[in-house]
Image (cartoon, rainbow, N blue to C red; front, side, top):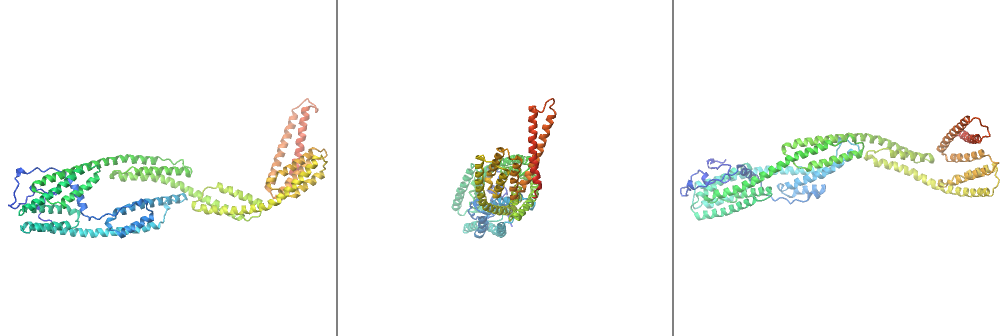
Length: 638
């Protein structure tokens, strides 16, 4: 394709200089003596190669104005999807690459946060990490739009490849035309034809980057041949040389300014533009100026390259330091001790600690590419160890929660079966018990918790609402009973204050009438205590009344009130209490009688003996009462 290879300069240099070109110049062109040639300044091939490679890369693409970037981080997921759809619809596909990448980055972060929360919720409800699945329709829409973008982008670059090859063929044809123009020099028309070739060259679009530099060098080589040959109008050539020199000196000045720029990335980027202008926009200069201007431009290029090289060398050193920093974080993750974690709170603290270390790991920055995979595998292994331990714990939690779920379901069923009960005392005790049991049962899976609690609460509320309504009705009746008992108490107290005489029949009559009145409200039970104390006062003030009989009358009154209330629990408690008092009384009697056995050489008239005998008789009297109470309870059928 590119023939005339013997005339192509060394590929390591951008501009060929006339003393490096072996092609013979027309004899009308003055030749520079060898002794007058200036030495070529040595430049770094690496620097030139790198900048030429970047220029070639840039030259492969048509310049299309990029779409303005927006604050995508402030967009919702829905807005990001709409923006992506509109970008693809309304703009050239090659102009939205940065926007699409930014949208992808923001979308992935936002979706990742949602995914993380849903997974944590799933695990907290007892799910296994490996079983987690999350359906998100908007993600499917996003993936579909992104797929369309990739298809259009691939189609664009496929078409662009064909266009690049067509442009290459057109430029090679222009090089052939330029060679023909030089070989068939016609002083009258050659400059005009040369300008046509130059204009056509500039209008042709980008070519493959792999062919860019060689194609340009060949074109530039023959352009210089043309200028060396052009002698028919020396004034015109000198004028062109002068203009080109001015433009190249401007490029050199800017390149030298870039050597002082702090931001090496910006400097290198602009340097690429300067090299492209040097190649494609500015023509040759006079033979005696060529080496000097090129050497100045190359020197500035080399300085920027060295500065950039040093920057990346320091950056690489920083990356090396990041290896130790990241390994230290991995060691911290491995050192997190979960062996003492016994509850959710403990595990949540560990999870938060690991999350902080993860964030610390990612905030450190990059490591050398050669170490990246190794560091990443170590990090994954450390976090996987923690996640395995965490999942094992929550697996056990799930098992426990399922057991708790079954227990609470049983309580719900019990509450539902009892909520219509008319057996108020029994049902109330049952509801109080199952409410206490509910509190003692641990967590259940979250997805069942609210529904289950609502069922249980509604059943309990239904029963207690009925109970309170019933109590409100009963309270009115009981309040009337209280008022009647209050009047009866006042009447009896008046008789006691008058020191009236009472018989057993009188006492029995008062107790029967008192009990017949009925129950008083719970908060007014004190009237019962006052009545019993009044009876005790009557007994103490009379020698004719039998204390045992009075005590039994009071006891029967109490027991009958329990029977009326169907309060069998109170009856059982009363029987246990009496048995306990009987045992205590028997022990006291035995102890006192045992003490008498140790007293010797004293008569029955001894005060000590008389007191002990008196205590024994009192205990025996009480024992008789306790036994009578127990016999009465035993005869009851309840």
